Image 1 (cartoon, one colour):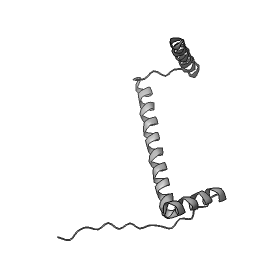
Image 2 (tube, rainbow, N blue to C red):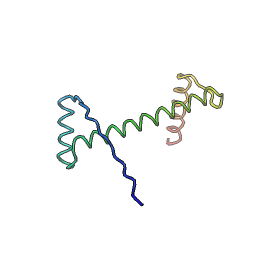
Image 3 (tube, one colour):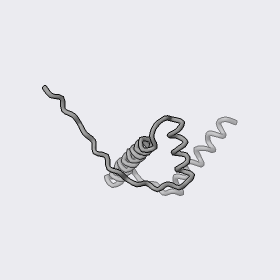
Image 4 (cartoon, one colour):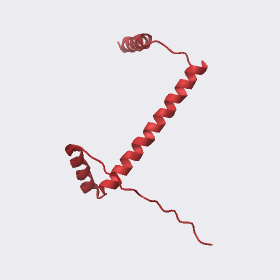
Length: 94
């Protein structure tokens, strides 16, 4: 039975980098033995995955707020709670 093969078509894309960033990329490529295109693809894939995870997390939190499962608190109130908690921990150490 013939084995299915996957072919990836890569399109050329021009990326403009600041000179200092381009130098870092070229230095890393030279040190690692990997191509700059491979390094950029890995970096971009990681960045896009991180962005997708952040969007999912924020959507989930928004859904929790909208449904009433989580009660929103005022920023000043949150800061006051953190400050009180920090003071409490400092007092325990003393």
